[in-house]
Each structure stands twice: as C-alpha cells, then as structure tokens.
Length: 411
Image (cartoon, rainbow, N blue to C red; front, side, top):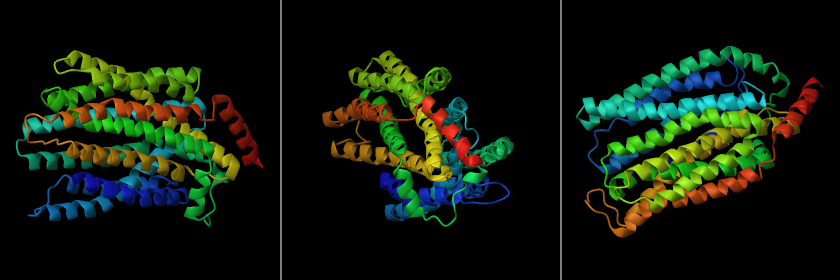
C-alpha cells in the first residue's frame, strides 16, 4: 500500500511535471522565469514535508492510505514547483561546455552530501528520541526548515549570475501561443534528447533498485545489524562525491559521453560482483560498494550535464529556450524510477514469500534480494551504455552549435 501511494503520486507527476516546466518557461516577472516558482513552492513543500512525516489519527489502514494519497498530490506538486526550476537553472547559468559540467558536478556533490547528511541526521534523532512517531515528526520539521533555508541561499547566490546569463537568451523566449502538447511533441522529436532520456532512465532505475534492496540485503542475506545499511550507503555515496572531482577532470580532457562510457562499466562490474558476496564476507561487500561508487559518480553527473547541450541544439532548431520542459522529462523520470523501483521490488519480495516478521527468509526471497541488489541493476546499466554510445553531441559539435547560435541570436 505504501508503494502504491508513491506510484499514484508519480502518475500525478506525469501531468504536473511537464505543465510546471512549460509554465515556468513562459513566466515573465521581475525575478525571472525560475525564481518565482522556487520561492512560491518552498513553503507549501515544507508544510507537506511536515505532514508527510506525521501519522494521521485514523483507525483503519484505508483511512491512512487515503490521507497519504491526497497529501501526495499536494506534496509532489509543491516539490515539482521547487525542484524543476532549480534543476533547469543549470542550462541557464552558463553556455560553456566545461563550466556546465563543473556546475552539475557541484550540484551533484551537494545532492549526495545532503543524502548522507539525512542519514546521519536520522541516526542522531533515533538515538535521542525513543517514540517512533516523535522521531519522524522531528525529521519532518528538520527537513522542512532546511528546505526553506537552503532554497533562500540558492536564490540569493545565483540571482546576479542568472540575470547576466539571461541577456544572451533574451531573443530566444518561446512564444506564449505555443501549446503544451505541441511543445511536448517537438522536444521528443529531438534525437539527442531521446538518447539522454534512455540513458538516464536505465541508469537511475539501476541506482534506485539497488538502493531499495540494500536494507534487505544487509539484514536478510548478510545477517548484519541495521547500522551496516547506513555505512554501506556512506561507502558508495562518499566515494561518489570524491570521484566527482576526478571525473570532472576527465571530462575537461575528453567529452561527456566518454566519461559515462568509462564510468558506468565500473559500476556494472561492482554490481555483478555483489551476487558473489556470502554471509560473513563483510569486507568484500564494502569493497564492492566503494568500487561501485567510482562509477556511480558518472551516473549522477553526466545525464544532467548533457541535457543543457541538448537544449542549445533545440534552440538552434526551433529558436526557443525550453529548459523547463526539457528538464521536466528528466525530473519526471527521476521520480518515476524511484517509485517504480520501490513498487516492483516490494511486489517481487511479496511474491517470493518475504516476511518482515520472520527470522529466516525462504530461498526464493533470498535469491530475489540478491538478484535485485546486483545483477539486474547491472543489466539496466548495460542498456544505458547503448544510449550513451548513440549520444550525438561531442565537444566539437557543441562548439559548432554555440557558433551558429551566436549568428542566429544576432540576426
């Protein structure tokens, strides 16, 4: 039922993501196109965060289910209003091929760092507060407060640079008369965009299936205390943060496609290796986690670094800047990948006889956990490599696009 709540919310995202992206592209205000949405959405998002972590005083599971379904519609819409324009800023703050990669890398480092901070914050709260309902209420309040503060810092820190960059795009605003459906058909006609979508869907689903299975792998298969789940996540994510600097250095000396084609196979090898881990081989499990982190960094970095170059190509072909609409597709896949991973993995565990109350699990459930933890996500990464190989915008091709855009904007 919990997985169904998330899945229903993501289906709603299929509507509000492109709609908010499309509307933000057409927003005209003294704050620009993105900042009004970010500032207007952050307070509702914070309120929803607090309510999502609060268990309603309903007796039946049906009542609780209905509460979270209704709340998810408001929460996901508010989150989209903040996250989507924030993500689209990456394509507007700079036109430089390498500077965009650095910008996305910095964003990814803070994103991964925030995930690590959230794990640590939860550990501190759980250690200090014994009542579960109070634990999660405090986490909701902390999350809501941090959201407001960090979004305010983001707007204040990028406002001046944003307006400097907008001068170059002043002649590229999309006409207000264009319809949403016509724009959606147009952006999906972009071949480079379809490659980025396929690359990102496969790689993100791979990450989310592995992340969803990690608690079960640590507990049911390895027989380890719950603390190893957080420590394993820290091993992967910490390595990924450190490697973002290294992959950025490689990207400056090659191109974005090459970095992905080098990094994703490292993650694949580590994920395939997890099927060999036996109970008691804790060091081998952590070693594979660290190796996976080397490749995971490119999965966080490259798709979002590629998309601004795709948007430049679209402007050359259409004469319009549609960052919001393009990023809405990637943001929706990000949410859908998480929802699908939780829903499908939960269903598969249920079908194979997994029981949270049991001290030992049946063999089919243990095999499902091991396959979902490593080999199946590795196969998804193999699909992402196929899309990356077909991605057509190299460093030289982007240089040609920018030169043609300069001529087009001046004319």
